[in-house]
Length: 237
Image 1 (tube, rainbow, N blue to C red):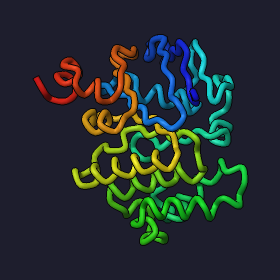
Image 2 (tube, helix red, strand yellow):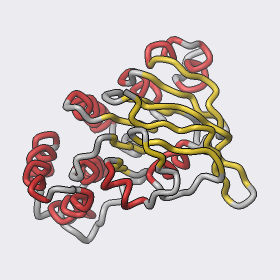
Image 3 (cartoon, rainbow, N blue to C red):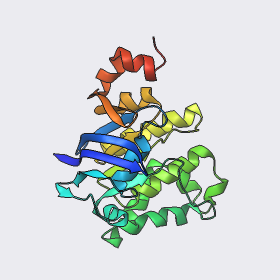
């Protein structure tokens, strides 16, 4: 079943057209990856889906409902949650306080304990550091916290924007392993990532975004084997 769909979406920053009539869908239960170079429009696409930016044309559907003009906070309640580029945690707040901010979108507040249990099961390190200030944690731990906060609202689709950015290799492997586990637990994932090798290896389907337009589509395996993708994004060729 199609859970999220973009139809001919364009986004402008003033007179500059950052996204050019892109269309793609995310099926329920999938991991879908968007890959591309810096400035390709990946983060713009994610911010438009989450409601932080408004498209200048086109439409966005979630579970069959047109949400193009829906406010960002209502999209969270609807079931769309984002872990943003750069993590965006609250550095002066504890791990528990950061996670609690993510419960806003829960329709049933009785699910808060269930959300904590899931997050601490996925990220035992957060459980160990409940009272630690977010700003004193390592980059990898802060990324865990950002993803954990996004999961607290029990989203139907999780938007992950550059989860491996700035992380040491051991944290990158750990983060992607956890992303796979999140998906196996039933959460649909839309992943924006410059680490194309990891992103494509985990993806059911993937799209290549170049200068605001989708130029290639396929399964993760198909794009991993695509010579042009190998040369441009995987350092092969």
